[in-house]
Image (cartoon, rainbow, N blue to C red; front, side, top):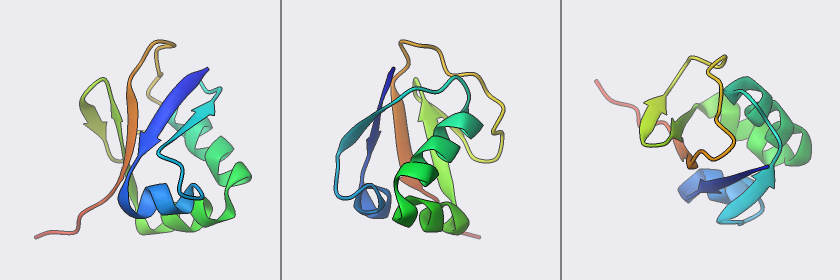
Length: 81
């Protein structure tokens, strides 16, 4: 089981939890499970979320495997130009 940490609007979408426990083996599975559990998180996904795994940020690649001992952090995308 992974411990997933979040802050800002993503934390708010997880009912204010700084961390949640989730069983998932890929980014896609992780995001889908969180969206199923937290309706506000599903809406946050539409706005865009980046996933950091062991310090490496993934924005669009949802098929990346997540090691069982990984440090996972969710953060809102920051628009820029």
